[in-house]
Length: 166
Image (cartoon, rainbow, N blue to C red; front, side):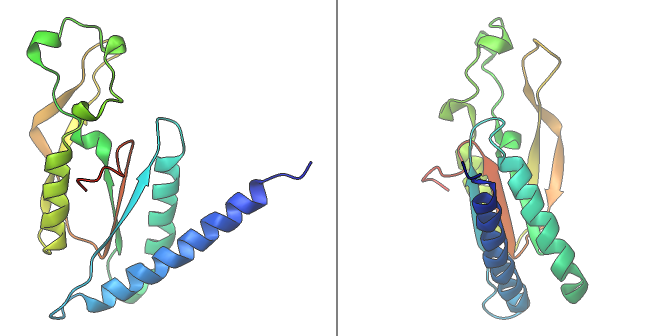
């Protein structure tokens, strides 16, 4: 029986080359009257490899083009940072019984607004979500945000990355 691994690797290399070209073209447009901006959405459930794929693409493209452009071309947004705080009336429910894989748990509206802001060439303050200690409820850090500058290519990674609102 033949392994499908070579096909998977070939598919990854093809994806890498395609988005590498998009990032380079977009970067060349920065500072012009019509800057280009692209978003790559990578969706998948927990432990499906989305984070590994997103980080690998980011690292390979940035390593290849950073010397030419003097900056990273690819930025990475994790949907995990956009989880909503749990409802205070629900805090007695153990975290292990909460369905974090339900769309209502993620602030898709805020993420969509942030992507529009990035598209306009403006920085955002990305929220930071703290998953808490084992068995404790997670929460959004109220006073902590992560500065995120616009990039020619932004990869959005997470379980609901293909939500139509994005």
